[in-house]
Image 1 (cartoon, one colour):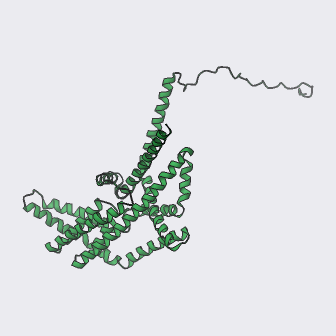
Image 2 (cartoon, rainbow, N blue to C red):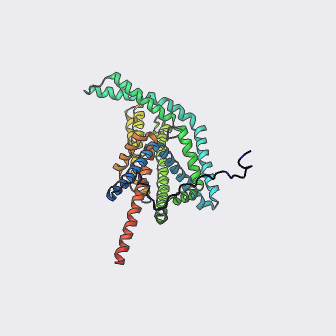
Image 3 (cartoon, rainbow, N blue to C red):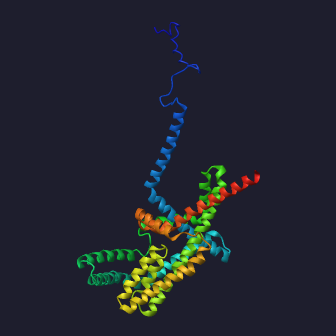
Length: 373
């Protein structure tokens, strides 16, 4: 017979051990008793977090640069949509669709009507450059420079192959099809509804800083649209003028040189140098007179861009020192290649606008404090 049958109740479980709230259980092993040392440890933790974020940013810098490239592309679409909206008075979605349709039609025209001629000229360009470089260095060797012809041919071949790679990548200045596709897709999403993403970023900003955030981001967006609009105008003008002036004189590959000059105009300073070297080398392949004419065309186009277009555009956009832009291009070009080289100028402009807006707000607060006192 069991104990329950005999009327004996089973033993109750022991009560849990209860600690009084004020009962000491000993200090935590992570507790720092010294107040000064605890303060310094907190500061060290903050610096460690900052350094960690910097390392993370460096690690994902390529992805961040692609996102910024998408923002630049989205700003181009946004500027075109705003311009069309002022003229046609239609919805924003239709304006964005119209900008994309016109862009696609332009590239279709470029591929079908001008693509065969440009591709044929691009195939001939490396051979012409090799020949002209060998002639140039042979002349330098005749003047007393210690240069080996074999080394010159190797250098010319490497340069020619590099130029051939560039001309094969005319469809996108970023050089990578996958990267360009990501930039285009993200840029289109940003251009369709930029306020959505602006509100999302503002949500993560502290409330007392949101007014300053909206002020800075609005000035940066305005400057970006004006900067890119001016850049596109300069690209079109340089490309058309170069092609027309070279075609009038009968310079070989006028269409290709005009296209390359227009594309490279997106990269200030360095792009003009590269397009000028290509133009002069091709020009001297047709004789001394043609070479001198291409030098004249180069300086004419660059002076028109530097003394007419750039001053008109700079009045509406941020003014950047040429040495600062060139230094940023060299640094970003070494770190990120062609993508960094192309985006160095817009990124530098956005940083400058942000610093200017911060300085303006500080001046306003200082003036306000003086008036109150």
